[in-house]
Image (tube, rainbow, N blue to C red):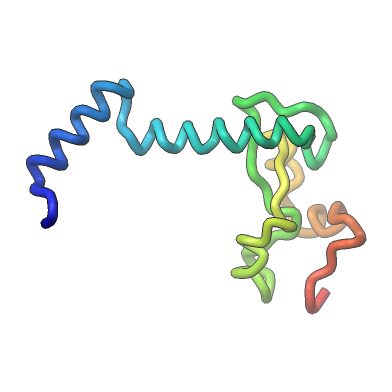
Length: 112
C-alpha cells in the first residue's frame, strides 16, 4: 500500500529535525565524505599537480573528456577514466587536448 502524502511529509520533517538539513543534502554530503575517505585510504593525489587534496577542494574528474567523444556514454561511467583533482587544477586543465596528453600510456580507447 502506497504511503500517503501526509505520511511522507511527516517522515521528511522528522529527517530534517534529526539531520538539521534536508535528507537529500545530508545524503549527498555522506556520499562525498565516504568517497573522500576511501580516496585518502588509497593515497590518491591530485591528477594534475600530485599534491594532497583537502576535503573542501576535491573534485571527481574524467581523464578523457567524454562529452564530444564517439564513446562518450562508455567513457562517462568507465572507472578507469575517473580520477580526482583539486577544483582549480581541474578547471585550469579542462581542455580535451590537455587531458589526452596526461592519460597514462597503458590506457587506450577504441578509435584513438
